[in-house]
Image (cartoon, rainbow, N blue to C red):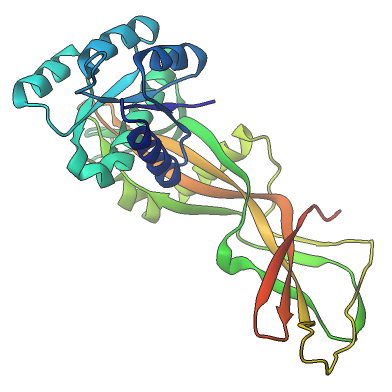
Length: 331
């Protein structure tokens, strides 16, 4: 299912923008180059954010947005324009467009899309629960009985990848050279069970300091981790050490003096923790002055699964990597 839609009458442009958004945000973006395809997409997919080219031959971006809102009234719209004048931009914002980006500044599109996607999710969660979101942490500033009351809530959660591997986390658990035969029993351990990979703040009424406070507030981090664990229904341990009972035998052919044969000199069997990669949206609000901001976080939560691969190093200096799947050691 797609949550973002890009509409441009030039199909190649729609494809490129959709690919950029997907790569940079992890949100699936659907390219469309006709109004009919755009309307059908909104009917078939849970579109949260739509990017509309203003100058299109069949319908302008503002005209198409009016039609889309009849199907999805809460969708966030971003005008993408290279030629629209100030009056057209003003008209778009008056009609309910959330933002606009010039085509010469497409590099900023992923951030703008993510900002309004988070805004959509928070508004939807607030409407569904009458702002009764799960409180992760609450406290007061300045004085005990007076001053701002700050609350953090988990507003939204999205699974981006079920088996994400940090590139630098691969470790060799077995090495076998040409002509050798070895048996291996997997023995793996991990301590990194919850990692905040990236964060960026979007203020809705006033800027706050959530990014800094998150890094300093250990209690809040623990509350977020606990909420994520409940949300994905995973049992988490601070450290996992387990041994696979089934032995695997590896054997490589003998070295040869024949110069035309490019044989495998060494094979490395590698293992790495496979994390569930999640996007969270944490809402920070002040009940005293009614100011609030959004903090989208990319987090990695470990669930006891490991990725395996073999890396073959050849005689000519080249190498080849082959994925050998996922394992879940018992214990």
